[in-house]
Length: 407
Image (cartoon, rainbow, N blue to C red; front, side, top):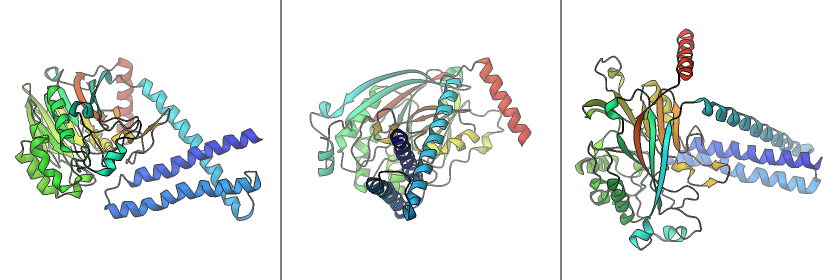
C-alpha cells in the first residue's frame, strides 16, 4: 500500500508540474501587454507552490492519501494530477515512435565552444546581478556553442545545395552583459563565412543599447546579406527607432515583409512573421500561383508557434528563437520552461513538420543572465536536399488524399 501511495504521489507531483508550468508557458506565449501576462501568471505561480504545501501538510497529519471532509478535494486533485501525468507520458511515447518514422533531417552536427570570458580575459558584465549570476556554478552564459548543422530541406534547388546560413537570435542587449560580448559574437559569426545571416528577434531590452548597433550587428557580413525581424522584448524600446538604426547599419528589415532575392542565380523568397507581437505577417499569398515562384522559401519568425502558418504558406525552411532552449535543462527531463503555446515541444533543435523544416535556436543571451545545461547557440546551417524514402512519399500522398477528401 505504501509503495502505491508513493507511486501516486510521484505521478501527481509530475502531473502538478505539467499543469501549472504548462499554463505559465502558454500564458507567456501570448501577445498581450506585460501587465496582463504577469496578472495571469500570478495565480499559476501561487497554485504551483500552495497546492503541494496543502497536500503535504494534510498527509503528515493523517498518514494517508484518502482525505476526508473539505480535504477530500485534495484527494481528487491528486488523482487528476496523476492521470494527467500518465496521459502526457503516453503522448510522449507515441511522439517518440512517430519521430523514428520521419525522414532524417539533421544530417550532421558539429559543435565547437568559444568561451568568451576567456577570450576577453574578463567577465563582460555591466550590472551587479550579472556579476553575481555569472559566478553561479554551471552557468554557461559566456560559453557560446558554435553549432554547425547540415539539414535536409525539401525541394531544394541544386544550386542552393551547400548554402550556409548563420541563424542568430535573442541577443537581449540590456547592459547587464556588456558590448564586448556581442562584438565577439559578431566576430565569430563572420569567421564562419556564412552566405546569409538571418536574425529572428529579441535584440534589445534597453533603449541605450540601440547605440551598440554600429559596433555589433552593423559589422555582420555575408555574401547574400543580413536580414532581421524583431521579437516581443523589442517592444521595450522604440520599435521604429530600432528598425531605422538597424537598416541604416546595412541590415534588411523583414518584419511583416517579404523580399525575393537571387542566390546563386536562383530565386529565393525571404519573409518575416513577428506575430503575435507585431502585425501583420508578410503577405506571401500572391506567389502561390506564380510559375516563376522562388525555388526556396525561408521564413524568419520569432516564435516556433508560427510553424502552422509556415506550413500553410508552403515554406520549406523556418527559423525561430524566443524559447532560449528552456534556459535551464534538467537531466533526463530536458527543458521545463518555454514561453510557447506548444510548451517545451519546440524548445530548441531541428523539426520536420511537412512540408516545413524548422530550426529553433537557443539564442545568444537572455535578460536573466543565467543558463544551466543550455548554453548560448550560434547556429551555422548548411542546406542539403531532402531525400524521402518511397514509403514516406506514399504516406505523405495518402495523407494529402485524405485531407482533400475531408475538404
